[in-house]
Image 1 (cartoon, one colour):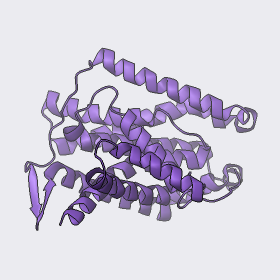
Image 2 (tube, one colour; image 1 turned 135 degrees about the vertical axis):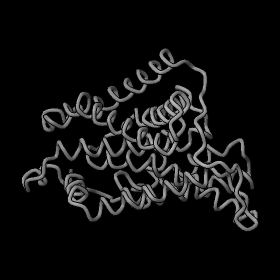
Image 3 (cartoon, helix red, strand yellow; image 1 turned 180 degrees about the vertical axis):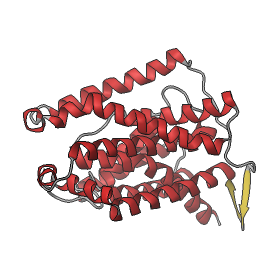
Image 4 (cartoon, rainbow, N blue to C red; image 1 turned 90 degrees about the vertical axis):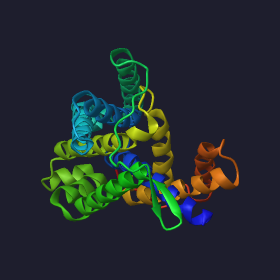
Length: 296
């Protein structure tokens, strides 16, 4: 029964990891850059959910979409003001795009963390639970009610994202821009609008992940650093730019970390992800679902 309990709890954590990582993977798949401020979208969602719910007494189920909209809006603002100069003049910026992306997103991360620390304060908050029952028994397994409800929402969102990317017009445009930005533009697709949509989706999903975990992790200004590191590991494990690989890698990482914490050492649980990353990069440098090469 312990094995089953660890597997289910690991899958639940993997779903939260996936919500964070897929947005980061989408951004890399289109622009080939890493957003070092991605963890702060998680922080913004957690704070939005906790503060609005507790300050105004709004039902947490109505606060969830507010947190998602806050993250999506922040993503669109970041793309429009900081990221768009990178690809709007794509060819002229190509020789410094990596340096520019690292500097500007890392600076944004520091700005958001210290702004929240000064405006709201360093003390952690706790958002209201989506579910009244603290523990739920499913057969012989006891699960945290908030985690179980949040996992259900995460499954719904990830399935919805998969359907959106695979079948919708906007999803096919995202795939086209990710494969070849210049070719997509020649085919009549607006790559600027598509990239703005990607940042909105990435910000919204990360903010939702923060909102769903807000009653568990107690948001503080630096709360986004931990999920951001997990996201970077997952994106590389799954294959840079592969959405499906990121989802799969997130679930694998969540389950393996759960086993490692119990059977080996809980103190080094978070370091286990880095160990897995090293092993995968040695034997499969392109990641689980990545390609060896791709035309940019």
